[in-house]
Image (tube, one colour):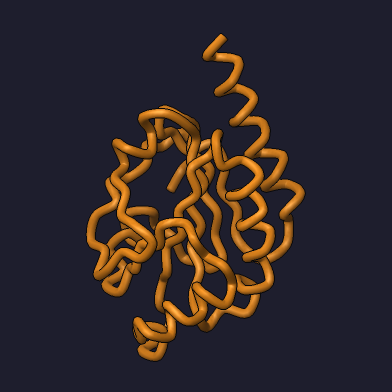
Length: 152
């Protein structure tokens, strides 16, 4: 997915955990961070406290959505997904992408992967891998600042 692309519709979930959201609901009011993760991804689990911190710190200004992307047959176990989500305090909505439909829509190849969309649903930042949380935080803050300025 290229920068400045529109956020795809959130279609094809085999299940939603912690509530379901639509693209229109997300872009109605504030920027969105969508992060792809997997139960078998060690880096995803290491990064989760940082994502939870974004979610909690910016809860009034930023939507945070998790997308569980299976990397193997074992990753399709819904009970395991629920257990790992609980263990890592993933309370935001989780799109279970068992058929890789959203993964295809995002042209995503990585976990963890982070997509930051502005409040109009335009992709402003993408990054993959376990490092670079400071860069992600900078990009999220930039989009949040722009969002605040446009409201004034």
